[in-house]
Image (cartoon, rainbow, N blue to C red):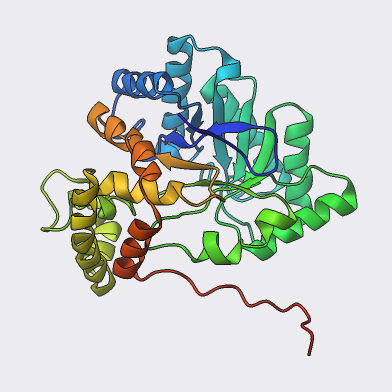
Amino acid sequence: MEYRRLGRSGLNVSALSFGSWVTFGEQIDEDVAYRLMAAAFDAGVNFFDNAEIYAHGASETVMGRVIARGGWARRDLVVSTKIFWGGYGPNDQGLSAKRIREGTDASLARLGLDYVDLIYCHRPDPYTPIEETVRAMSLVVQRGQALYWGTSEWSAEQIRCAHAVARECGLVPPTMEQPQYHLFHRDRVEREYARLYHDVGLGTTTWSPLARGLLTGKYNDGIPDGSRLALPEYDWLRQEVESDEGRRRIEKVQELEPVADDLGCSLAQLAIGWCLKNPNVSTVITGASRLEQLEENLGALDVAARLDAAVLERIEAIVDSKPDPEPDFRRTER
């Protein structure tokens, strides 16, 4: 396993991490979750991602039980959770001081941990002053309930504002951001955040490297029976895949198949390996409901090492998704 620094912090996270979204507490039971986490840990994965909203808290409960069952040393684990959606009451959503305090307490209780290593603001909250949120997250760190705090799907401007508030008020600034990142979704990680990596040492724990399964090729011939998209609760995702843009993406995935074949790897390994090539990606969060999927995902590390400039150019020519560079507004000599 390769380990990378989380941005400018001193924390090392495994280049491939394991997340519980849509699996723990929904698709798989505790026994399967244990086998998956144990296999991931044995392969060198040290970062395990969660959130209070996943399976409405059940995901944290399952992961907490697995950690206790595994008997792993706490120092060998990097565990995260995310706060925003905690229920349906008037103060159960958002990033108010009350929501953050109570959400953190509840998450730790479900996980059975004294602290998480990473805690995120799961989305920006337009209704809460950012100073209130920064103060509340800083207090979570100061109380020892988390070691680092960060954001998820915040704009570069919002992240900069949080850093400015932290500097002005002597508070703890955010360390990392958790954005979506894959071959078809690149602008934020590659363009919008470009200056933040240098200016504030932003770390990234990226999610959805397989574009919700699209980049595995399993939808190339339609939506198979028994897949996630066949379930009524994922009708929104089915519509996305069956849209005009979704069909265009599937055509590009089909064109990527010869590239994967030439490398002797799967489409999933190619897609994850491509994400790993970005030096500003601290870790790529993967998920699995079967050991075979986990093993396949872990194989992406070897594939990434074989993605040379020629292969990357070949991929780029097919997907044609590279964002335009951010304009440079610095003064130039005339």
